[in-house]
Length: 256
Image 1 (tube, rainbow, N blue to C red):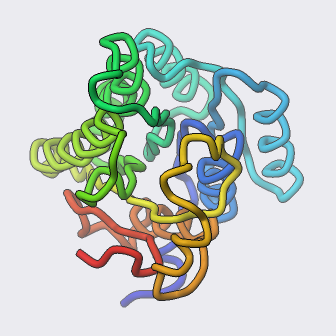
Image 2: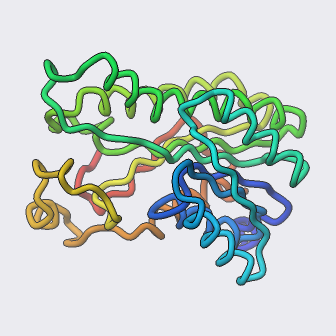
């Protein structure tokens, strides 16, 4: 029988990368509110991480911060080890870090290409590969990658590296879901549509805000909490039978 307790995360430990602001922060706070002990991650702004941890603790939750560059496999390994050392396990990971570059294909240098793939796709791989052994030992795990419309919608120009990385992230989630389902580990993708976040709008000149709003059936940008809600479902027992899937949270902007 489905009850509200199915959405609780009591006793679980969650690590959310890129959680100093925007979508990552909303996910971290939602998980903490549902009872999880949360690890907040970033690699530039310690003050932002401290603020998130402080808010969670003020609300009665447990949290810690770890500064780590998720495009570095060694740094990710240390972060997962620090999580397990502090909280005793790691049950949920959300790969949320990503960078986008608005560039014509022939202007993408190998360095830029590698940077985008490492920060999006490779970061998801590193996080999963270090977390899965701990999840297998408990026969429980939730892996969530935050992709984006770029990876599913064929009408975005000048973002070849990002489109490739985002599609690859969902492919990675499906591969993990297939291989580790026997260990009761699920892996899914959440794909945000137009979400109201603080961002570098110079990378979105091809997508004017007013035009996007006019194309969304719900007539507005989404809120970060609406992405967090999808992640909470997938991380909880309510979403235990969902794996290898993508949840599009886009207000109907694209219907697949």
